[in-house]
Every structure is written in C-alpha cells, then in structure tokens.
Image 1 (tube, rainbow, N blue to C red):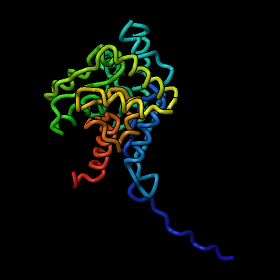
Image 2 (image 1 turned 90 degrees about the vertical axis):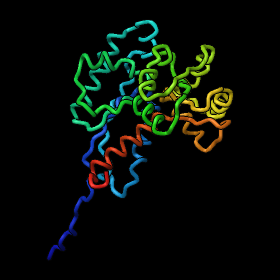
Image 3 (image 1 turned 45 degrees about the vertical axis):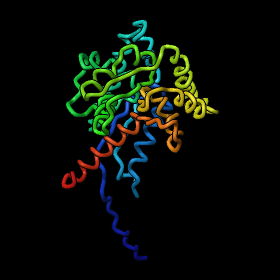
Image 4 (image 1 turned 180 degrees about the horizontal axis):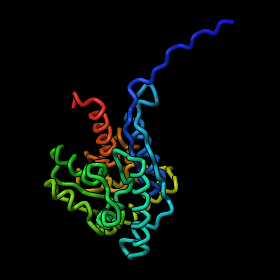
Length: 254
C-alpha cells in the first residue's frame, strides 16, 4: 500500500516576542489584562500571538499595608524582585506589573535586581505619556490608599506637564469597596454603583489608578458618564505593548 504524501505544513508569521506579566495583585485584574492582551492580537493562528508568561503571585504581602504601616515591606520588595527576576529569566521583551500600587516599590526593586533598559513597560509612565499625547493637562487619579498616600503618579505626570488630583479622604472607603468587590468577584450591581460614583466627581479626566477599577470601567465603555473621560491604564499599556511588538515584526512600517 502506497502512503499518501503528507501535505506541506509551514508555520507562517510566527511572533517571537515574549511578554511577562507580574500579577496576582489581584488575580481577576491579572486575568483582565491577559485577556485584553490576547484580544489585541486578532490572529488566525495562535503562533502569531506573543508568548505570554504570567506569574500570578497572589501570596505577596499587601502593597497598601506596606506603604501605610511599613508592614512586611522588606518581604514584599523581595518577593516582587524575585518574581520579576523569574520573568526576566524567560528573556521577555516586555514586562508589565499588573498593579498600580506596586510601582511605588520600583526604586527599591531596582536596588536588588537589574531590569534591562526598555524591557519594563511602566504602567504609570505609559499613562502619563498617553495623556500628554492626548492633550490632557489635568487628571483625577482614583486608586488605593497606598497609591494616593505616596502620590506616585505625581512624578510621572508632572514630567509630562500634567497636574494630578486625588479624591477626598472620605471617598477611600467607597473606592476600597469597589476594589475588594472585584478581588472577590462580587460583580452584581457593581458597574451601576461605580457609574453613580463617577457621576459625582468634579473632574472630567479620571485615571483608573488601580487595575481592579479598570475591570469595572471596562463594563462602562459604552456609557456616557456625565461627560467623563475614563483613562484606563490597562488598555493603554496593552496598546503600547501591541504597537511595540507589531513595530518589531514589521520594522519597515515603524
């Protein structure tokens, strides 16, 4: 019996880029970022997408408590550093920390490990640059108590000529409620409550300064919330990584 020749098979347009995501802060926000990154590459074959390595390190100490109370700060910085080193071992081309608050610890992390130039796609710097390019000069950052206490967005935004504002102290229990609800996957009615909260804010340009808030904001994409412009760091960083990978694959169009 004569065997039929196998049809020729060739893997075309392979994407050789690697993206590392340090997640677990929390897990559903990490899933949200991962899904958006996959959706950014609507391809015919899986191998046309970048390889994505995720460390969903959900056993790290609280970033907020480390900032407010110095609780287990050294342990947190060490665990963040170890996770980043693990992702760098995969020779990732782009690395993103899927938590706004974790960026407060970058100076301490850089004292422990060397992050190659250009590999870290800094969530906060990417947002500030996007705002400048969009002609935005004034933003309200809603975030965790830790992000607000350190005013970590200030340095990034001021470098790009953007004034930063933060919610009133009495708003923090409300924001904490939204953030914890996402972490616990308690979705019912959350988007409507969040829309009502945003309606009451005085500022037009509102940065979702916590990745959990980005999850809720995604459900409001088609709503006009009292003329508010919701600035989503997750979507901006995904677009940035996508554009970088496409430019590297097609340098003639860059």
